[in-house]
Length: 140
Image 1 (spheres, rainbow, N blue to C red):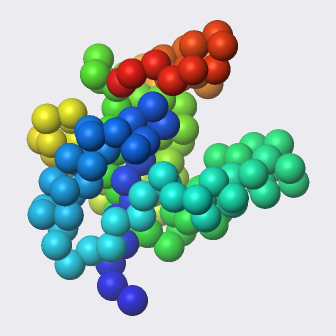
Image 2: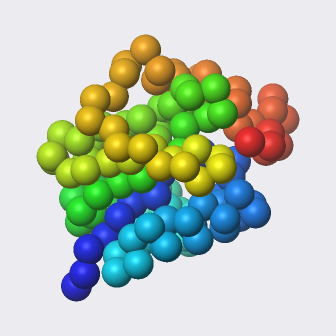
């Protein structure tokens, strides 16, 4: 098995032209790496399983997915703030001493060595950026 890079990004970018464009950028930057994209049905199934068993669907990524990744690349929101889940995923990889990068919507990547807790959004703040009160997606 080759190297695997995890692509953490806000859920309101899933299935969008932005997601596809950034996946292309990542693929070109890491041509011999497998990209682990959480926007896949088997990952949604894993989240549902952990939601039922622990109440925290993110633990699926923390315990089942990220330990098998060699690096990560993460998309914060446009203002530089990090969604709670994306921040948590990045923190797990940094804790495993794995290299991580952030990527902006234009596809520019930069290395991250320290995560600034002041840029982390709460779960409620994150949800308010991705979902309306009626659970409709808010464009990134």
